[in-house]
Image 1 (tube, rainbow over the protein chains, first blue to last red):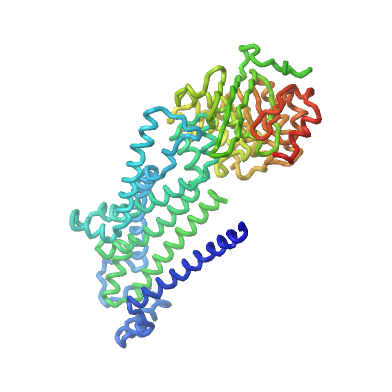
Image 2: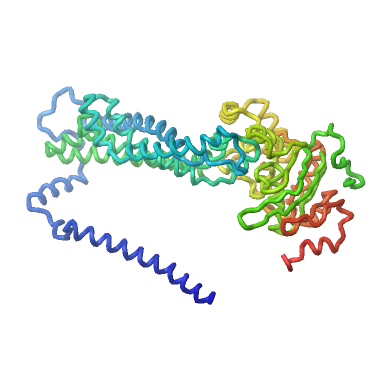
Length: 296
Length: 269
């Protein structure tokens, strides 16, 4: 009796897993059929082929000097300009990330459950119980909705909105990136904090620490190495976003990439792209070096 | 009554001038769901006593310790610390009681990526305000650093004060956990299986350290141990637990071999 029940249980466990894998496969195939994706679409038109060739053939020979026939005499050299644009890209990304980090930490705190979960022994005054039962879930829920709203709108759409509202101000670019980034940081931070091991928090409660102290000194430090590593990754994403905002006219790498692309100066495009690549590698190396100090 | 010849133990309910905490359980039970962890336990522990809780794993030793510092509430009966019933205390008052009782956890509960200094500093949080805690963590006051150095010196690892805790050995980490409990400036010290996280030689020195320090500072000490040899060597009074009940509670030399045998008999649990 017990044995046959046990076998049924075993098979059901496997069955669920098998069904799940098949469902994921079927979903993928359905999406392909729905979009009418076929390999033939990857064969370019003859015109497209020419452009693609012209573009990719310059990958190994990026421009060192301007490709234009006429360059105004007061224009800085191409490589110097690429460096300047890279600098501006970093400045925009840093401004955006500074704002995003502040929002991420604040909203991440409100969106985590750890700060209002009860005491292990359940002891609490009537005010604490009221806050925990009535206020906390409302704060938590509305913060989650706010975070979802911030994240669901891409930085480019925020940028279009702010450009229309405030014009081409530097602040609007920084805020356009900071809003979705702040939302993403808040979501990930809150999850990292909620998933941090609770043993220390429990021990701190036992030595008389308050709920906020437990959060700040028992949970946050445990999640901190992961939070720092993730922030670096988001900084890298912010570099790319700040590059792209150049397409709207901000003097980041994207501005020059778009200009050179329109003028068919593909060599210059590659120069700027390689500058961006160098930037991303630099950030990666820096975060790796820091992580070694923090985590290892 | 409980005192063992040669050790300066005060008897329960004795001189209230002593610093050590007094614990008193009356018909205390703890039920988790359908599991009875403790069943109507009566226990009096006097100021400055050193008591060993012995028994198999799952006998209720840890739950008993958690009752004493108010992290587990009894589902029946009462728990008193220094004559105050924990169930009648406000949350703030309960915090104060907890701040006065150090607890060395079985898993040590240290933050691996923080320095020893900060892990020990955390012991004082219960006695600090929120901003006081923030200040102590970010810019530790000189007198705190000195106190912590002295405590680390006492537990034998002063040179590790600025070391990251996860770079220490198991035995050293255990000393950090003890130091954190001491930096609480407690009146009572509880330790849950201090021998499980280290090798036998270090286990002995850990238990010896706990008893010595408690004696020096007049702290009440309760330690749960499944190692009977250590329990008999270091504690003048033993409380034997089996399946949530106290089966004996008396001076160590008065506990018979047959009672120890019965306590650790795996049959009929």
